[in-house]
Image (tube, rainbow, N blue to C red; front, side, top):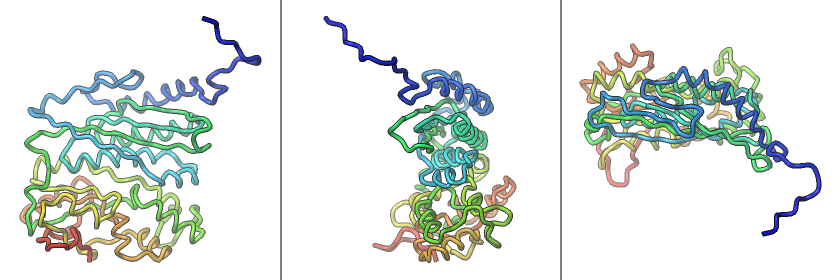
Length: 354
Protein backbone atom coordinates (compact mmCIF):
# COMPACT_ATOMS: atom_id res chain seq x y z
CA UNK A 1 0.00 0.00 0.00
CA UNK A 2 1.37 3.39 -0.96
CA UNK A 3 1.87 5.92 1.82
CA UNK A 4 -0.22 9.14 1.50
CA UNK A 5 1.68 12.01 -0.06
CA UNK A 6 2.33 14.97 2.23
CA UNK A 7 1.25 18.46 1.20
CA UNK A 8 4.17 20.92 1.05
CA UNK A 9 4.30 23.57 3.76
CA UNK A 10 4.56 23.95 7.50
CA UNK A 11 3.15 21.02 9.57
CA UNK A 12 -0.31 21.77 10.96
CA UNK A 13 -1.20 21.33 14.63
CA UNK A 14 -4.48 21.19 16.50
CA UNK A 15 -3.74 24.73 17.77
CA UNK A 16 -3.38 25.91 14.16
CA UNK A 17 -6.86 24.50 13.56
CA UNK A 18 -8.21 26.53 16.48
CA UNK A 19 -8.18 24.10 19.41
CA UNK A 20 -5.79 24.85 22.28
CA UNK A 21 -5.29 21.68 24.33
CA UNK A 22 -2.98 23.48 26.74
CA UNK A 23 -5.69 26.05 27.52
CA UNK A 24 -8.08 23.21 28.24
CA UNK A 25 -5.58 21.66 30.63
CA UNK A 26 -5.13 25.00 32.39
CA UNK A 27 -8.89 25.29 32.80
CA UNK A 28 -9.16 21.83 34.36
CA UNK A 29 -6.47 22.73 36.90
CA UNK A 30 -8.14 26.08 37.61
CA UNK A 31 -11.55 24.58 38.35
CA UNK A 32 -10.44 21.66 40.51
CA UNK A 33 -10.52 23.74 43.74
CA UNK A 34 -14.08 24.93 42.96
CA UNK A 35 -15.25 21.38 42.32
CA UNK A 36 -13.52 20.06 45.44
CA UNK A 37 -15.68 22.29 47.65
CA UNK A 38 -18.82 20.62 46.28
CA UNK A 39 -17.82 17.00 46.87
CA UNK A 40 -20.13 14.65 48.74
CA UNK A 41 -19.12 11.38 50.47
CA UNK A 42 -20.79 9.43 47.64
CA UNK A 43 -18.34 10.74 45.01
CA UNK A 44 -15.69 8.07 44.41
CA UNK A 45 -14.09 9.72 41.37
CA UNK A 46 -14.93 13.00 39.70
CA UNK A 47 -13.13 15.81 37.83
CA UNK A 48 -10.31 14.66 35.56
CA UNK A 49 -11.42 11.16 34.67
CA UNK A 50 -13.45 9.84 31.75
CA UNK A 51 -16.49 9.39 33.96
CA UNK A 52 -17.63 10.19 37.48
CA UNK A 53 -18.24 7.38 39.96
CA UNK A 54 -21.06 8.07 42.41
CA UNK A 55 -22.57 5.61 44.86
CA UNK A 56 -26.10 5.98 46.21
CA UNK A 57 -26.47 7.20 49.80
CA UNK A 58 -26.87 4.18 52.07
CA UNK A 59 -29.78 5.71 54.01
CA UNK A 60 -32.15 5.06 51.06
CA UNK A 61 -33.95 1.71 51.18
CA UNK A 62 -35.60 1.92 47.74
CA UNK A 63 -33.73 4.69 45.94
CA UNK A 64 -35.22 6.11 42.74
CA UNK A 65 -33.05 8.28 40.51
CA UNK A 66 -34.48 11.55 39.17
CA UNK A 67 -32.67 13.34 36.33
CA UNK A 68 -33.06 16.75 34.72
CA UNK A 69 -31.24 18.79 32.08
CA UNK A 70 -31.48 22.40 30.93
CA UNK A 71 -29.59 25.50 29.85
CA UNK A 72 -29.94 29.21 30.57
CA UNK A 73 -31.21 30.36 27.17
CA UNK A 74 -30.61 33.85 25.85
CA UNK A 75 -29.87 35.26 29.30
CA UNK A 76 -26.34 34.52 28.12
CA UNK A 77 -26.61 37.45 25.71
CA UNK A 78 -26.84 39.83 28.67
CA UNK A 79 -23.80 38.21 30.29
CA UNK A 80 -21.88 38.81 27.05
CA UNK A 81 -23.09 42.40 26.77
CA UNK A 82 -22.01 43.18 30.34
CA UNK A 83 -18.90 40.98 30.29
CA UNK A 84 -20.13 39.49 33.56
CA UNK A 85 -19.82 35.71 33.80
CA UNK A 86 -19.56 34.85 37.50
CA UNK A 87 -23.25 34.15 38.24
CA UNK A 88 -24.62 32.58 35.04
CA UNK A 89 -23.37 29.20 36.28
CA UNK A 90 -25.67 29.47 39.29
CA UNK A 91 -28.57 29.82 36.85
CA UNK A 92 -27.42 26.70 35.03
CA UNK A 93 -27.44 24.58 38.17
CA UNK A 94 -30.69 26.07 39.44
CA UNK A 95 -32.66 25.20 36.33
CA UNK A 96 -31.96 21.48 36.73
CA UNK A 97 -31.84 21.01 40.51
CA UNK A 98 -35.08 22.95 41.06
CA UNK A 99 -36.72 20.75 38.42
CA UNK A 100 -35.77 17.46 40.06
CA UNK A 101 -36.67 18.89 43.48
CA UNK A 102 -40.29 18.93 42.26
CA UNK A 103 -40.37 15.13 42.64
CA UNK A 104 -38.86 15.40 46.12
CA UNK A 105 -35.38 14.42 44.94
CA UNK A 106 -32.18 15.29 46.75
CA UNK A 107 -29.64 16.37 44.08
CA UNK A 108 -26.55 14.14 44.15
CA UNK A 109 -24.36 15.41 41.34
CA UNK A 110 -24.21 17.82 38.42
CA UNK A 111 -22.43 17.76 35.06
CA UNK A 112 -21.91 20.76 32.78
CA UNK A 113 -21.20 21.29 29.09
CA UNK A 114 -19.38 24.47 28.05
CA UNK A 115 -18.83 25.12 24.33
CA UNK A 116 -17.11 28.09 22.70
CA UNK A 117 -15.32 29.15 19.54
CA UNK A 118 -12.00 29.84 21.30
CA UNK A 119 -11.41 29.00 24.94
CA UNK A 120 -10.80 31.99 27.21
CA UNK A 121 -9.60 30.39 30.44
CA UNK A 122 -10.46 33.43 32.59
CA UNK A 123 -14.06 33.63 31.35
CA UNK A 124 -14.57 29.87 31.50
CA UNK A 125 -13.19 29.83 35.05
CA UNK A 126 -15.68 32.52 36.08
CA UNK A 127 -18.54 30.51 34.59
CA UNK A 128 -17.50 27.26 36.25
CA UNK A 129 -16.88 29.03 39.56
CA UNK A 130 -20.55 30.03 39.38
CA UNK A 131 -21.54 26.44 38.57
CA UNK A 132 -19.64 25.25 41.63
CA UNK A 133 -21.34 27.90 43.76
CA UNK A 134 -24.72 26.70 42.51
CA UNK A 135 -23.81 23.14 43.42
CA UNK A 136 -22.85 24.27 46.93
CA UNK A 137 -26.22 26.02 47.31
CA UNK A 138 -27.98 22.84 46.15
CA UNK A 139 -25.83 20.47 48.20
CA UNK A 140 -24.78 18.45 45.15
CA UNK A 141 -21.38 17.56 43.77
CA UNK A 142 -19.91 19.05 40.61
CA UNK A 143 -18.74 15.64 39.45
CA UNK A 144 -17.48 16.48 35.96
CA UNK A 145 -18.29 18.10 32.66
CA UNK A 146 -17.11 18.82 29.16
CA UNK A 147 -15.40 21.86 27.67
CA UNK A 148 -15.36 22.06 23.89
CA UNK A 149 -13.81 24.46 21.39
CA UNK A 150 -15.58 24.67 18.02
CA UNK A 151 -13.36 26.89 15.88
CA UNK A 152 -15.03 28.41 12.82
CA UNK A 153 -18.24 26.64 13.84
CA UNK A 154 -19.41 28.79 16.75
CA UNK A 155 -19.99 32.49 17.46
CA UNK A 156 -16.61 34.18 18.19
CA UNK A 157 -16.43 35.63 21.69
CA UNK A 158 -19.47 33.71 22.94
CA UNK A 159 -20.16 30.40 24.65
CA UNK A 160 -23.15 28.19 25.37
CA UNK A 161 -24.00 26.13 28.41
CA UNK A 162 -25.98 23.03 29.25
CA UNK A 163 -26.29 21.16 32.52
CA UNK A 164 -27.46 17.80 33.80
CA UNK A 165 -28.45 16.92 37.39
CA UNK A 166 -29.15 13.57 38.98
CA UNK A 167 -30.90 13.20 42.32
CA UNK A 168 -32.41 10.48 44.45
CA UNK A 169 -35.68 10.06 46.32
CA UNK A 170 -37.09 7.27 48.44
CA UNK A 171 -39.61 5.45 46.26
CA UNK A 172 -42.35 5.70 48.87
CA UNK A 173 -41.74 9.44 49.28
CA UNK A 174 -41.62 10.49 45.63
CA UNK A 175 -44.01 13.40 45.01
CA UNK A 176 -46.33 12.95 42.04
CA UNK A 177 -49.34 15.12 42.89
CA UNK A 178 -51.80 12.26 43.17
CA UNK A 179 -52.93 13.35 46.63
CA UNK A 180 -53.82 16.92 45.63
CA UNK A 181 -57.48 17.78 46.26
CA UNK A 182 -59.80 20.74 45.80
CA UNK A 183 -59.37 23.18 48.67
CA UNK A 184 -55.63 22.63 49.06
CA UNK A 185 -53.48 25.74 49.41
CA UNK A 186 -50.85 27.02 46.97
CA UNK A 187 -47.76 28.44 48.67
CA UNK A 188 -45.49 30.55 46.48
CA UNK A 189 -41.79 31.04 47.19
CA UNK A 190 -40.44 34.39 46.06
CA UNK A 191 -38.18 34.53 43.02
CA UNK A 192 -35.05 36.67 42.74
CA UNK A 193 -36.22 38.20 39.46
CA UNK A 194 -36.89 36.78 35.99
CA UNK A 195 -34.58 33.84 36.80
CA UNK A 196 -33.62 32.28 33.43
CA UNK A 197 -36.86 32.48 31.46
CA UNK A 198 -38.43 34.97 29.11
CA UNK A 199 -35.16 36.57 28.06
CA UNK A 200 -36.01 36.57 24.37
CA UNK A 201 -38.92 38.86 25.25
CA UNK A 202 -36.76 40.84 27.70
CA UNK A 203 -34.15 41.41 24.99
CA UNK A 204 -36.89 42.52 22.60
CA UNK A 205 -38.11 45.03 25.18
CA UNK A 206 -34.58 46.31 25.77
CA UNK A 207 -33.93 46.68 22.04
CA UNK A 208 -37.22 48.46 21.34
CA UNK A 209 -36.58 51.01 24.09
CA UNK A 210 -32.82 51.31 23.40
CA UNK A 211 -32.31 50.61 27.11
CA UNK A 212 -28.89 51.13 28.68
CA UNK A 213 -27.88 48.14 30.78
CA UNK A 214 -25.60 50.42 32.83
CA UNK A 215 -28.43 52.71 33.95
CA UNK A 216 -29.98 52.75 37.40
CA UNK A 217 -33.75 53.09 37.42
CA UNK A 218 -35.33 54.74 40.46
CA UNK A 219 -37.80 52.46 42.19
CA UNK A 220 -36.80 49.48 40.04
CA UNK A 221 -33.12 48.59 40.37
CA UNK A 222 -32.10 50.29 43.60
CA UNK A 223 -28.33 50.72 43.73
CA UNK A 224 -27.79 48.17 40.99
CA UNK A 225 -27.82 48.73 37.26
CA UNK A 226 -30.53 47.42 34.98
CA UNK A 227 -28.15 44.78 33.65
CA UNK A 228 -27.18 43.60 37.14
CA UNK A 229 -30.84 43.40 38.13
CA UNK A 230 -31.68 41.26 35.11
CA UNK A 231 -28.62 39.05 35.64
CA UNK A 232 -29.56 38.26 39.26
CA UNK A 233 -29.18 34.47 39.37
CA UNK A 234 -32.04 32.02 39.71
CA UNK A 235 -32.91 31.20 43.29
CA UNK A 236 -32.09 27.62 44.35
CA UNK A 237 -34.83 26.23 46.59
CA UNK A 238 -33.34 22.81 47.32
CA UNK A 239 -32.16 22.97 50.93
CA UNK A 240 -35.19 24.75 52.47
CA UNK A 241 -37.67 22.54 50.62
CA UNK A 242 -35.86 19.29 51.43
CA UNK A 243 -35.82 20.32 55.09
CA UNK A 244 -39.57 20.99 54.90
CA UNK A 245 -40.24 17.57 53.37
CA UNK A 246 -38.97 15.95 56.54
CA UNK A 247 -41.51 17.83 58.66
CA UNK A 248 -44.60 18.45 56.55
CA UNK A 249 -46.61 16.62 53.89
CA UNK A 250 -46.14 18.35 50.55
CA UNK A 251 -48.67 17.12 48.01
CA UNK A 252 -47.17 18.67 44.90
CA UNK A 253 -44.58 21.16 43.67
CA UNK A 254 -43.91 23.19 40.55
CA UNK A 255 -40.81 25.03 39.37
CA UNK A 256 -41.93 28.20 37.57
CA UNK A 257 -39.82 28.25 34.41
CA UNK A 258 -40.70 28.64 30.72
CA UNK A 259 -44.45 29.14 30.51
CA UNK A 260 -44.58 31.25 33.65
CA UNK A 261 -47.12 30.89 36.42
CA UNK A 262 -50.08 30.18 34.17
CA UNK A 263 -48.47 27.25 32.31
CA UNK A 264 -46.49 25.56 35.09
CA UNK A 265 -48.58 25.56 38.25
CA UNK A 266 -51.22 23.03 37.19
CA UNK A 267 -48.73 20.59 35.66
CA UNK A 268 -48.57 18.78 39.01
CA UNK A 269 -52.35 18.31 39.31
CA UNK A 270 -54.43 15.19 38.64
CA UNK A 271 -57.18 15.40 36.03
CA UNK A 272 -60.16 17.52 36.97
CA UNK A 273 -58.34 20.07 39.11
CA UNK A 274 -57.11 23.61 38.41
CA UNK A 275 -55.24 26.39 40.19
CA UNK A 276 -56.87 29.68 41.07
CA UNK A 277 -54.18 32.25 41.82
CA UNK A 278 -54.75 35.70 43.31
CA UNK A 279 -52.30 38.04 41.62
CA UNK A 280 -52.72 40.55 44.46
CA UNK A 281 -51.54 38.10 47.11
CA UNK A 282 -47.85 38.92 46.72
CA UNK A 283 -45.90 42.09 45.85
CA UNK A 284 -44.66 41.83 42.28
CA UNK A 285 -40.99 42.87 42.02
CA UNK A 286 -40.65 46.28 40.29
CA UNK A 287 -38.53 44.85 37.44
CA UNK A 288 -41.61 43.02 36.12
CA UNK A 289 -43.71 46.19 36.21
CA UNK A 290 -40.97 48.02 34.34
CA UNK A 291 -40.75 45.30 31.68
CA UNK A 292 -44.52 45.31 31.24
CA UNK A 293 -44.62 49.09 30.80
CA UNK A 294 -41.64 49.27 28.48
CA UNK A 295 -42.90 46.47 26.25
CA UNK A 296 -46.61 47.25 26.55
CA UNK A 297 -47.01 43.55 27.43
CA UNK A 298 -50.51 42.28 28.19
CA UNK A 299 -51.12 41.05 31.74
CA UNK A 300 -51.98 37.53 30.57
CA UNK A 301 -48.77 37.40 28.55
CA UNK A 302 -46.72 38.45 31.59
CA UNK A 303 -48.05 35.49 33.58
CA UNK A 304 -47.57 33.13 30.61
CA UNK A 305 -43.92 34.10 30.11
CA UNK A 306 -42.51 35.17 33.49
CA UNK A 307 -42.61 33.95 37.07
CA UNK A 308 -43.73 37.49 38.07
CA UNK A 309 -42.10 37.11 41.48
CA UNK A 310 -43.01 33.50 42.36
CA UNK A 311 -40.27 31.00 41.49
CA UNK A 312 -41.56 27.83 43.10
CA UNK A 313 -45.03 26.63 44.19
CA UNK A 314 -45.96 24.02 46.78
CA UNK A 315 -49.36 22.45 47.44
CA UNK A 316 -50.32 21.64 51.03
CA UNK A 317 -53.51 20.84 52.90
CA UNK A 318 -55.13 23.92 54.45
CA UNK A 319 -54.31 22.77 57.98
CA UNK A 320 -50.60 22.42 57.08
CA UNK A 321 -50.20 25.84 55.44
CA UNK A 322 -49.25 27.82 58.55
CA UNK A 323 -46.62 25.33 59.72
CA UNK A 324 -45.11 25.00 56.25
CA UNK A 325 -44.94 28.78 55.89
CA UNK A 326 -43.26 29.17 59.27
CA UNK A 327 -40.68 26.47 58.49
CA UNK A 328 -39.82 27.91 55.09
CA UNK A 329 -39.63 31.44 56.50
CA UNK A 330 -37.23 30.23 59.19
CA UNK A 331 -35.05 28.82 56.39
CA UNK A 332 -34.82 32.23 54.74
CA UNK A 333 -37.57 31.90 52.13
CA UNK A 334 -40.23 34.54 51.52
CA UNK A 335 -43.56 32.70 51.33
CA UNK A 336 -47.03 33.78 50.20
CA UNK A 337 -50.36 31.95 50.17
CA UNK A 338 -51.10 32.69 46.51
CA UNK A 339 -54.20 30.63 45.78
CA UNK A 340 -56.14 27.40 46.03
CA UNK A 341 -56.84 24.21 44.14
CA UNK A 342 -60.33 24.17 42.60
CA UNK A 343 -62.37 21.75 40.46
CA UNK A 344 -61.63 22.17 36.74
CA UNK A 345 -64.55 22.51 34.39
CA UNK A 346 -64.42 20.99 30.92
CA UNK A 347 -62.35 23.10 28.51
CA UNK A 348 -61.36 25.48 31.34
CA UNK A 349 -57.69 26.56 31.71
CA UNK A 350 -55.53 24.67 34.17
CA UNK A 351 -54.47 27.85 35.93
CA UNK A 352 -56.39 31.09 36.31
CA UNK A 353 -54.44 34.12 37.53
CA UNK A 354 -56.66 37.04 38.42
